Image 1 (tube, rainbow, N blue to C red):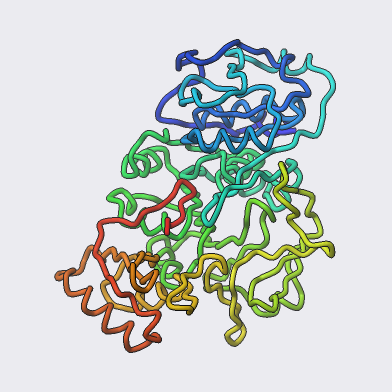
Image 2 (image 1 turned 45 degrees about the vertical axis):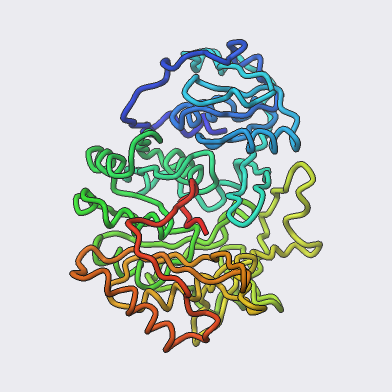
Length: 443
């Protein structure tokens, strides 16, 4: 039970205390814990309350769906088509007018006395939506055991102060919450309404020394004014390809930090983590596996995992996560180069250029070779003649004197190192890249 892990040093620091604030508009009733026993509920509220109420609901509710803070009508419609919900629990801090399920609130000030008097503990299902980066999000059912299989409990982890830049309703964010909770560490939760610079300022002000983010978010963090004031002991990357350039930048910025890039997904849970500050992972893992996870490369060139602890599933007709023999095809293309296996991109993220498949990340890796390019996102741009052409969005390095010259340099370099169909037809300078709620580049 999560309540067993919040009696020590675990605490939540936020820029606003909203435990008892917020309005009740749209809430049809106020519930006590006894009224959610055995029910299927959704939590659509401020991140602070989502974390607090998750603790209270664990082992009581039959299932708990974690709803992203900015979830819209499309999200609620898809969820209600797939799941039978009894209540949507809110705190008045989010827009819940698009739910047809009864919207309610948990009674303020629920505490240990009420919790201890509630009978019939059960193994609550935790429902999380996939990011939907390349399609319609699916709902995946987890248990606390499957979510915390690789979580470090107490020990040195209790000395860390974790910052939360992800939405805790998403897999990566909930992982950070559970890590802090089970290690009895401190968790810093900036309000989702703060702009990015103010979030980093808040982390600095609260002595954040452990942080998890996608490579795209890490590049954004490094450009923030307050980034140099962060004194990090733990740096974690996930959700996207961790190339050598971003790993080197983080090692330089935070020389005393342990750096790990994690391969994980909402479906498979945590697969493995790489801690040697090198891109990719050792080729020996394909033969020997790592931490109860077997690996192989499919005929299509995608990484497949077999997790001996896998017990999660899709809900609402989403299909099977694992094949009959227990293997999960991650859809991530990989390539063996010497003693390393490198990630190349998503199989279903390929752009069709005149019948040729182009993996955006493959082109991005080449663009990043150009001096002065800080960040790049490659995506398809519709064409009435060719159907699609490649567009590269470039964020110049802040120290570049003549950013406009990058456009010519990028085009020239790509023509030299890439087949013609992979060369970007459009190269555009931008202030920042489009990043989705999960911290991944939006293509």
